[in-house]
Length: 151
Image (cartoon, rainbow, N blue to C red; front, side, top):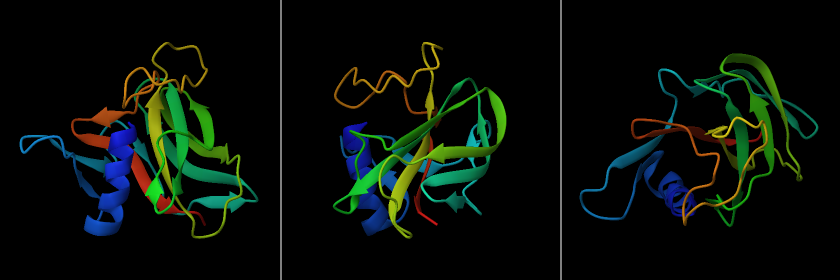
């Protein structure tokens, strides 16, 4: 997760929103965005103080909407600044309180994580060098997430 988000930060500013994982020439191309079964509607995100509201979030299985900060121009996957639990299916008007100062225009990553053990607790504990227990949601090589500025 750390390597992926570091590479994602470089790619966002240097090459757009498509990321190539730099492990080998044959490494799969990973992108961020929405999928057919999982998505985050980022158009029209509303803000009231430190709380952001997304009009619709779809997740295939129970999980989390998580916000990771940008630090020094790149996403920092070692920490998160907000999370809210999502039930399987379509969730409307999803509010998420950001636990740090949030400046208008400040970049962040909003993404989905699966509640792997179904305990309704975000298990943000690294199980290896890149992955936390409640794993990022992927559809194929697309990580369900977006880099967006705070409204």
